[in-house]
Structures are given as C-alpha cells and as structure tokens.
Amino acid sequence: MAWTKEKILTNIEKLMRSKFSEPREAFDYFDEDNDGNLTKIDFKKMLKEADVSLLIRGLVAEFMMQSFDTNKNGLVSWEEFQEAIKVSGIKK
Image (cartoon, rainbow, N blue to C red; front, side, top):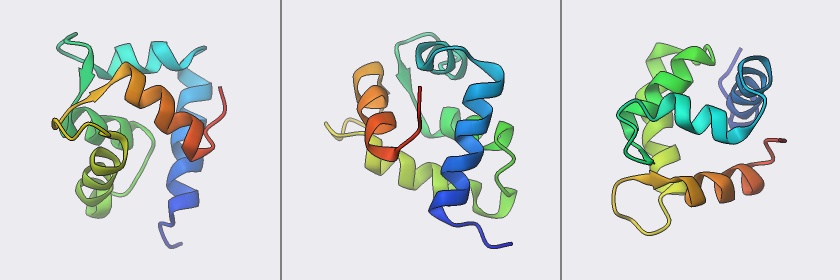
C-alpha cells in the first residue's frame, strides 16, 4: 500500500488516540529533552511509533518540520504543533 499524506495522518492520529489523552501529552512525550520544542529527530520517533515505513520516515519528518515550523527557526513549538494539528485534520 502506498504511503499517502492521508495514511500517514491516519497513523499519527491512531497513535495519538491510543497512547495519549490530550495533544499536549503527545507533544511532551516526543519532546525528549524537555526544551519545549520538537526537532526532526523527535518527529522521526513519532513516525516510527506510528508505524510509518523506515524508507520514507526521514522525508516525512522533513516535510512535517517545514510545514509545522512557521517561524522557520528549525524547531516546532507547542503553539506551532497545536496549529498544525488543527490544519492537518488530526482530531483531539
């Protein structure tokens, strides 16, 4: 089966629903260094847990960084993450 944007978002949503009760819980879990930001490495971990294929994980993580990082500082803050969830269609 092809990895479409919809399939990736569906897998991420399933991960969020099964493991976390709130989006903030997910953000804090993947923010391993607790600096209040997500990095590309954090997104790769999220994608791995969402069973996204290793072959495309790096590309998808890069796309997520570029899409979510609205101030272009190379990090995704909690505010940027919240906005990305709203725009992506992932439900709380």
